[in-house]
Image (cartoon, rainbow, N blue to C red; front, side):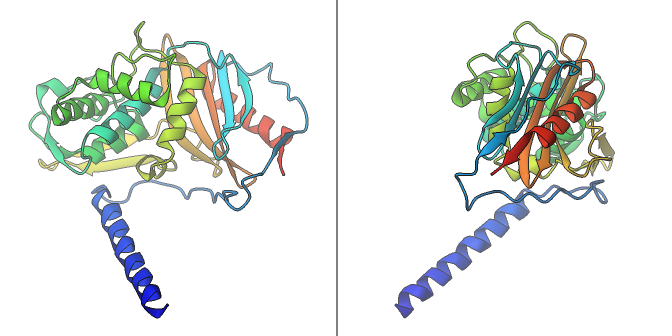
Length: 305
């Protein structure tokens, strides 16, 4: 019994060392301190998998402008509120969640790569990447998710395509197929309006749920800014596109988007009663306002028992 206990202790120590090494490998080299605010404390109901979510009343959602929305409990997947969840819509920069996941699964984010003229995309928001500079893929990844930088999305897609030897849009659509996103199509890594770039709230639920398993995504939820430098010493800066996190300590960003066709789109994680709730709005005239209305509806209309 003593020998068995000693082996278990030694094995645990080895695993802990490996976990620490892995987390250190993927920490970005950020210039100075990233601008961030503390994340809300989430008490996941792991010890009680039978927790029930009870709707106590039907909230009035008539003033929510979004053409489609979906609100669900992240831990159980239970859907709480929805409108047109299967309608195919343009999703703007929510596309970058798929860009990030395809890059995450098909490249090494700890590697550096050189910026070429192919990577340059002068469409705001952007980092202003300089031709000839060398940057870490993880810094580009973070800037894309936090600041929705379009040149970051293009550069990350090109890097992943070169690393994997595969067409990046094919990787995006292949990932969508694996997740079961049967009503989605991706045509570009930035989320620019295109008849072949669309999704539904139900499909995006699958994508969001998957990304929330990885700390490379979730650690960015309360960052209001991100800075890093390339090999040439140039400082690159991204500002968070989620305007709610500064004034709402119970909110974490997942991704935002806006184009003329898609209007406002936003995926947000909210801490309510110690639980993680995802609020997704598509084709919204006021994505922040709609998100807060749906947040209030959950707080006043549902109980966890």
